[in-house]
Image (cartoon, rainbow, N blue to C red):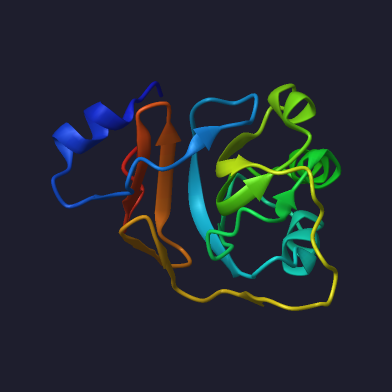
Length: 159
């Protein structure tokens, strides 16, 4: 089914819309799926663990605290996400390897690019409600992202 976020917003008044803070980095410009959340700060250990799991069309939402000092996702982890069926990743933080990310069939939205990798200290939590860009992202909700922005719903709007 073809969809756009303006059409979804017109048809469903009860959706949440994230503030327009994000840039597109992945090769897939429109993506959607059930939300899986990660909270971490300048340590992508939990992101690394999640991309190793089957994504089954899910969207990883990463609360990176808005840090612009380190990248939470690069080409190697993004390629693993593609291999494991993730639909996309939304990061309140940075990415790196932007040319390689653009060639991958994965939706990626992030605040900016930063060439510096993260620390690997095993920190972070998975499966919590996370809040950024004016939206509370709950595990199991549905996220729809395209070039118009990010929409979050409590149900599958395309069913």
